[in-house]
Image 1: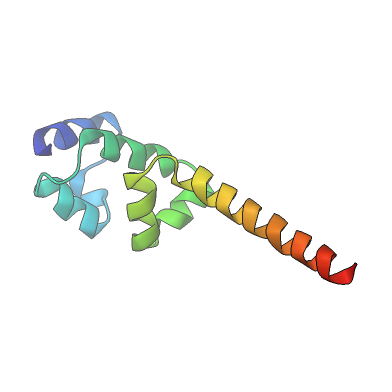
Image 2 (image 1 turned 180 degrees about the vertical axis):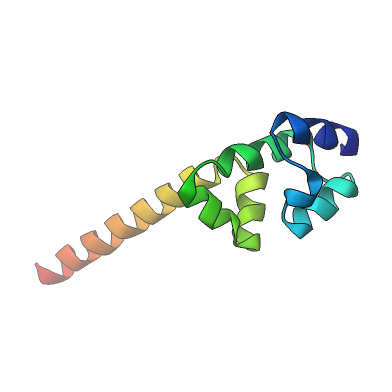
Length: 92
C-alpha cells in the first residue's frame, strides 16, 4: 500500500509532511491505501469535513468507512424520531 499511497499524494497536491502525523506514519508503514489518501484530500476541500478531520477518532472513522456520515445521520434521525414519538405518546 505504501507505494500506492505515496503515488497518490502528488496527484492530490499534497506532500507526506502536510498530512496529520498519525496518517503520515500510517502511509509510511504501508497501512493506508492510495484510496484513503485520495479520500482524505477530497474531504479536506470541505470546510466542515476539514474541521471534523481535525479530530483523530472522527478522521479514522471517516476514512475507514465512506458511508460513515450517512450511517451517523440515519442513526441520529431515527433516534430523534423515536424521542419525539415517545414524547407524543407520553402526552396523550
